[in-house]
Image (tube, rainbow, N blue to C red):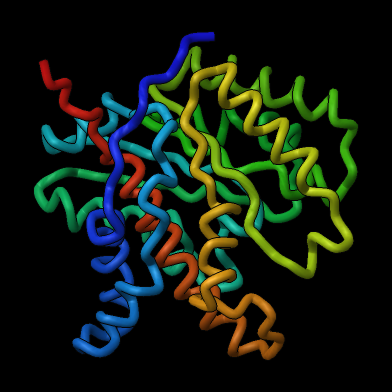
Length: 262
């Protein structure tokens, strides 16, 4: 496996830019709400430091497209917890990219299906992914395999098979790992599956959006309270969270390699 060069570090202000733009649309646009969105969407400065870049996707955006991104995953990709697809993170990703590249023709397709394992997702790649000839696929997975206690060797094999199929048909691919939840981690062993996902990403030299780590960062700092139980509280949490996640994905996509100083 190739050694990775040290990656460019971005400060919270840079990383939060797209997040602010996306969250601004939801929160109503007042200065007070915009300031709150800026704080809540800030991510660690080095969170993407060693993740591979997506030069073809960035190049297509800079040229104005057209560009098609397919998000394939489970319930947290579908986004019904926020009320409807327009508030899911794929829709927020599209908004954040459009804010950065206003003249670009960008299509982000949400192909999330609740309660699916990685194998079930791979089984529908033909109709839900390849049929749209995407430029980038974001594959969110591992949650339901952990919940279902899928055999870990079978899970790894499924990931490798899925990546082989995606790479044969799609210019660029990115993984996304599960959401963070203190409560669910007491009853589900996510670590085994997220470790395998990380390993497959590294061996395949693919970027992995560290959603789990970012959400833990927010939880540890009291930015989000993931323990809320009321129906309306959870809906509002999902709306805000998906805005931040979608915009943070946009930040990861548009990173540039560091300039080499001779």
